[in-house]
Image (tube, rainbow, N blue to C red; front, side):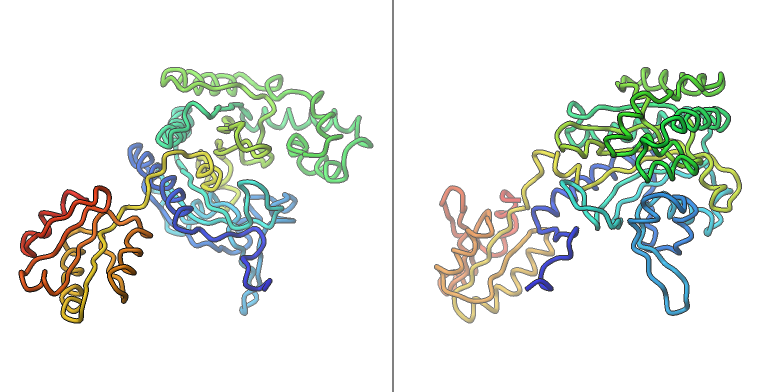
Length: 414
């Protein structure tokens, strides 16, 4: 039945998927904490204006991809398509500006109505970090270093490339914007309809166009680097020097841009060739104008976000699920004693599976199905001796163990 299938662009995270998902989040959380980034969680929906202000009324995300709903009170709310805006909103609404700098890590679901493809879903999950209140290039270096540390912790260090560019300061950006308008205006008729619209509103976004005709024009467009002033060049030089000092390799990509005006200076992506067209697994940059765009006082910021689904597809060697102990009672008296014994063992730190019914054969079949490490067999003979038969399900060896010594005996299977 169609209504018994997941909605297009969503999927169930079954136990194996969830282990991979959790591996990404836990390694990222661990690395972020080493750099002093505390975990934050914001609501999965915000007032729509939060995203319209930050993403721009004309962006594809706002015009085509947001899940927006009307509340009974008449207010518009939107499922978050990204989390930077929510983190900044949290800073503003909780009056945290006086505590700058703020260093946050997050993990959670995001929502975009776009065409599902490999590693991309309509409900997807991201990890990310945000550093607020640090105007110096050292902030950019640290944020990139956190991303590198996360990828290395996931075993991806040698399979990922850091691409780096600078968007300069607002003066440089304005000069480049005008150069793009002049260039693309001369080729207006060859632009796609979307890019002709962007030419007036946000010409930098033409550089991101997927239209083949646009991409041919983009290849001959002016480069940002030719319009950087001395201050911008000095900032970028410090970022590169910091990365060099940390031994973090990178490739300069002069076509790497961010379309929104509050982005400035450093833009970066960690990319891979292993996921087809979806090459970026982590992307970020400096957004010194964002807080002011949202109505706050000017506050520098820099951060990144990474797709958990994409990273989990790359991660190898994810730990198997812990192998439990199978408690196998035989007979009514053993069933009653096993209920208590299972609880005692669990409180002692053991993972214990207690079947609900069945004979010895059926229960042992379940023990094999769940990949139990050992079986603890409790029958009439064992009960009479206040003992249990412990069977190593890997070697087949077994021994009778007094119940008061059981926990010590089972410790070798933990």
